[in-house]
Length: 366
Length: 235
Image 1 (spheres, chains in turn red, cyan):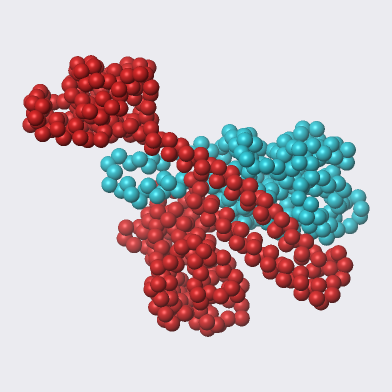
Image 2 (cartoon, rainbow over the protein chains, first blue to last red; image 1 turned 90 degrees about the vertical axis):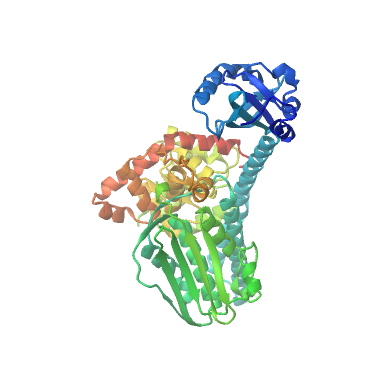
């Protein structure tokens, strides 16, 4: 049992060095003990508080309600944060209000059962949170403007180059055609980079949402394979999908994007001939693992460690691959948005297996 | 094709190169004719009154007046003129906001000329049109889950009180309309949607129209317009 009487009590010494305000009240709601931090934060001397009702530390408009809450708590006290998720406010002696976090605990003492409140001033934290929110909103607005301003001229140019090449504005010489073809290539590379960059911001933005629905695994894998078929032209690469049959919850659009990205990497790093295996399994706990295995160039340990960083490109990935260095980073963002993880196993000259896991999300489905 | 059957188009787009490209792409179709074009939203309202085009292709970001307001004003005075919003903005906010205009169709800029032609023909016949990309944004906006909420799922397994209560979203669409919307997202044509849901083509079209009508007056759409106009997005 805690002894609160003696100034020499270890408990009193202990709470005095704690960097949060500690206010101990009896079942009648009267303040019995405070620590030095309480004096510092609230601006009251200890003797001004002792014997007063706890509500002296609250904005007056909240006092009446608080008495009821306090009585409710006293009848069934357990250690818990107070009003978690709510914006709690406290009041200083000079009337200033400030945001706080409060942890409540019942304590057994020689004076009977008391309630200890640990009060933390979170003014700075709130300010930082607000600042982050404001900045994130600004970034979203900026990205929205950039999306429009960067993409509009690129898309406009794409169409007009095509019309020029088709001879719509007059017949072109071979050299003119060659130049326009180069312009088209450059333009589409830039468009791809812009699209990927904007995706990075999209997934980082607080307001992005996943559309969680029931996905048929074989439909998902087949769709992705169909989408990358043009990349297989002229190559003797086969993509094998072992027969599987299950359903799970995830964002079908985004996961398809991940698989397409991983498959196109595997194709890039497989020489003109080879097999790529695309597998999906569902564990007993409902988690789903999808993996893509190739027998291509593989990677060293060093390369693997930086693989999922922004703008990373393998030394083996030459400019001719038209890589933006963002593909794997985007995959990671999408998988992590699902609460999952992505990893790589690889050996140089033997091949690479990229796998990602999506946790059970059925209860979040719309 | 005789002259009288041509669909008279007006292009409202502030980016000159895009406007030219659009014009060339569309005039390749013998039954389409561009009779007016402008970069200015206010001017678009005047031109619509004077020239009475059959159908207007409208961007959101315009000089002087945005495409959402311009569409509203045009529709008020000339209810028979059809409008397709062709937005270059890809943000959810802008796309959701565009739904408030009460246009007959919604497409994104990366839509192929063939798809846009389909949309023009369909809207000209009096149908509503929603491209799959726009449908996806709508679905995501109404039925999507915040990433922070999903991530929390992984770390809060031991929590005694589930903080993740599956709140039923306030959605203006009926079950059937939702099914139609999902099939549009999947890229299905009205014909295919009808076959899949065992309903007639006419019923599918009614559902699409009803989806657009409901979305145009929904609170969330109106809020998106407000947010968009307050944002730093410059038109």
